[in-house]
Image 1 (cartoon, rainbow, N blue to C red):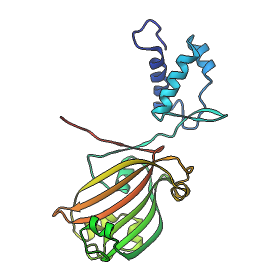
Image 2 (cartoon, one colour; image 1 turned 60 degrees about the vertical axis):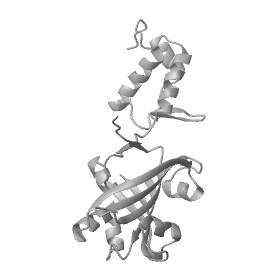
Image 3 (cartoon, helix red, strand yellow; image 1 turned 60 degrees about the horizontal axis):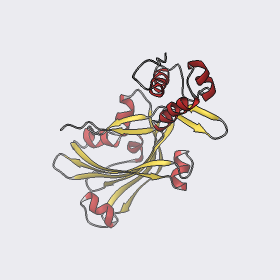
Image 4 (cartoon, helix red, strand yellow; image 1 turned 90 degrees about the vertical axis):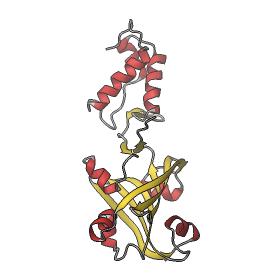
Amino acid sequence: MIKKDSPIPIYYQLQELLKDLIDKGELKPGDAIPAEREYAEKFHISRMTVRQALTQLVNEGYLHRIQGKGTFVSERKIEQPLHRLRSFTEDMEARGLTPGSQLISFEIIPATSQIAAQLGIQEYGPVYEMKRIRLADDVPMALEFNYIPANLVKGLTEQIVKESVYSYIEDQLNLEIDQASQVIESSIATQVEAEFLKIKKGSPIMLIQQQTFLKDGTPVEYVRSSYRADRYKFMINMKR
C-alpha cells in the first residue's frame, strides 16, 4: 500500500510495489500495465506521480512502452556476472535456461592482421572462424564471431561447435582455460544484426570483444559479440 505520511517519496513506493508484483510473477512479461489514471484513482495520487514511477521502471527495464498501445511488462534480462569466466552454454544452464546455438558458418580462414594480433599468431595463419547466434530458451541473445587458432586447437568440428567449444578444449585436448579480458561498449543494431537477433534496426545492443587465455598465457580465442540490450545485462562486484 501507499503510505502518504511516509518520508519515502510516493512515486518510489509505487515503483517498488510494481517491482514486487513483477518479481513475484503477479505481473508477467507481456502484461499490459493499467493506465496512469487508474493508478492515480486507486491510490489517490496525482497522475504526474504515477508517470514518474512508470518512467523509472521503463528506464530500469522492468517495463516498456509501445506507442499507441500502452505500457507493458518487459521480459526479464539475463544477468551475467563479469567476475567469473564461463561459456555461454555453462552460463545458461546455471540459470535453468536451455542454451542453444544456430551455426551460420564454420570454416578455416587465414587470419587478418587484427585477428592475428589478438591471438598472438602470424598474419594469414589458419584460424577457425565461427559465426553463430546464441540462444536461451530459443530466444536470440547474441550474434557471435569466434576465432580460434587451428594449430593450437586441433580437430575442432562443426558438431563440437554446436555443443561446447570450452568443454572440448578442456576435456578432450587437456588445455586449461584460465582467464579472459573484455571490452564492452554500447551501440545500435545494424540491419544484419537486427535480422539475426530479431530486433529492429537501430535497437540498442552491447558490443563485446573478448580475448581468452590458457593457463600459460597463450591466447586461445578471440570473440566479437553483439548482445541484445533488452534481454541481457552484465554485473560486476567491486571491492575497494
